[in-house]
Image (cartoon, rainbow, N blue to C red; front, side, top):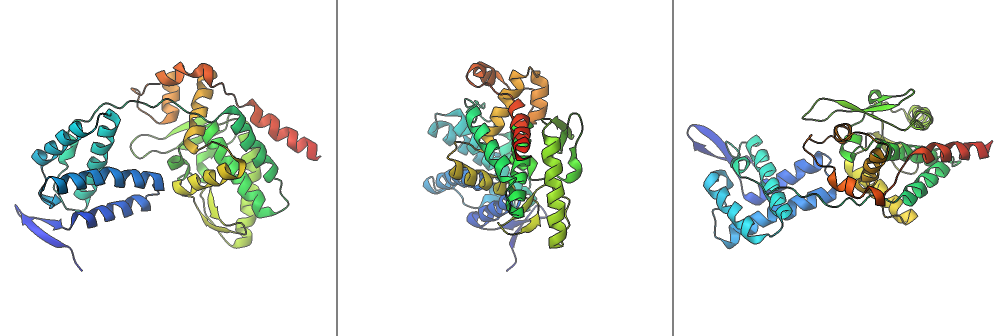
Length: 332
């Protein structure tokens, strides 16, 4: 069934029920690899907009919305929520939804972009503990020498993921896009990050990454050949018996950590492990501008809360290589 259209000033715009448009929006976010938690947040934030329209008997034809209607919703948000972050999140969700509507030809422009948002207040960092990072690393080293080749490969993949997050502070969205030629080995191994809206940049990795990555790629190449697969992604999707495909979504990365968290009884997520990396950089004496560059954030981003809590969260990465070499030494 084709979309209905309405003619306005000689331009055709799609006219569809709001719920159908939102479902299309959520499907697009899912196709982009957004996590289940991110999708849940978008649905919650847009449901606030839906309830506002219903309870206040507003026009449900979103194609007719302009600045006046959006300003009324902005006032509603200001009155309903005390938290600036809650207000900001709901306005941002609506802005991104309207960006989608513009791309779908539902509206000619995005009036939400002209609506001021509340300032963002950062939550207190809650990094993974040093003990939990060591427990995870010890488990992955042991599993990387499992007699079963697929178990070995999965563990080595997860070692690479751990080093990309704890070692280089990458987000799961960045890691999911990595290709083999984005990794550079050497005295100071580095990973290249290619954001959508800024120039590519590289981030230092711990020295042990050289050995871990070489062993991972060697086994990955062998099992790819056995399966008749060829891909240039750093990561892969697999079951316990074989590689299924190249690449791994952001949600797939989060699932890996959910499984490890349950298995090892760890309080750890990719976000908390990334925050541990930021504290590590601060203790290493890296300057703020470099840390912000590696985090992929704007120069205006504040590291104040991290600095205020440095004394509680002390990290280094020397143990990564020590544990890795000690285990290999004990096997010989």
